[in-house]
Length: 182
Ligand code: IMP
Ligand code: MG
Image (cartoon, rainbow, N blue to C red):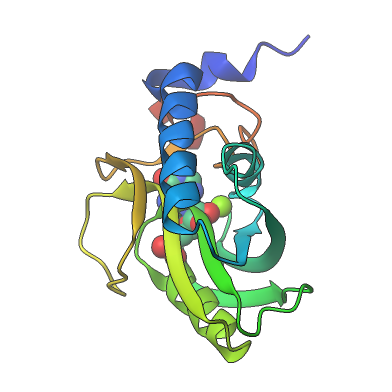
C-alpha cells in the first residue's frame, strides 16, 4: 500500500483555499485590465497546467488558451541551465494579447526562452503571470505583471510543481521532507 503523497511534505506553504483566493483576485485583475482585449492565456507544460485551468475559470472576459512545451529541470532540484522548447503554440497569436502563465519564476531562464519564442509569433502585447516568484538572484531578470505569491528560495512541490514528476496533483504547495531527495 502507498501512503498519501502529502505525507512527504515537511510543511505546507499555501493551502488550496489560499491559492484559490489569490487566483480569483488575479483573474479579476486580468478581466479588468483586458476588458476590450483579445486574450490568449499560454502556459508551459507541465507545471503550469493546474494553475492555468483554475486561472482561466476566474477570468470572466472571453479568452482562449494554449500550451507550449519547455524542459529545464532534470531529475534533480537544480536547474540544468539548458531550456529546450519541446512544443510550440498552435493557436494564432498575431495581433493578440498574450498572457504567459507560469507556475514559478525561479532563475528566469525558462520564461526568457518562452517569451522570446512567443514574440516571434508577433502578438499585440505580451505579459507574464506567475503564481510563485522565488526570492533569489536571477539569471534572467523578467518583468512579471501578475504575481501570485513571493516564496523563499526553497524547493516547493504541489499544485503543478513536481519533484521527479511526482507531487503535481497535490492541491496545496509545500516543502518536501529532506529525506525524500537524499
Ligand atoms: P527557471 O527556468 O530556473 O526559472 O525554472 C523554471 C522552471 O523550473 C519552472 O517552470 C519549474 O518547472 C521548475 N522549478 C523551479 N523552481 C522549482 C521548485 O521550487 N519546485 C519545482 N519546480 C521548480
Ligand atoms: Mg518542473
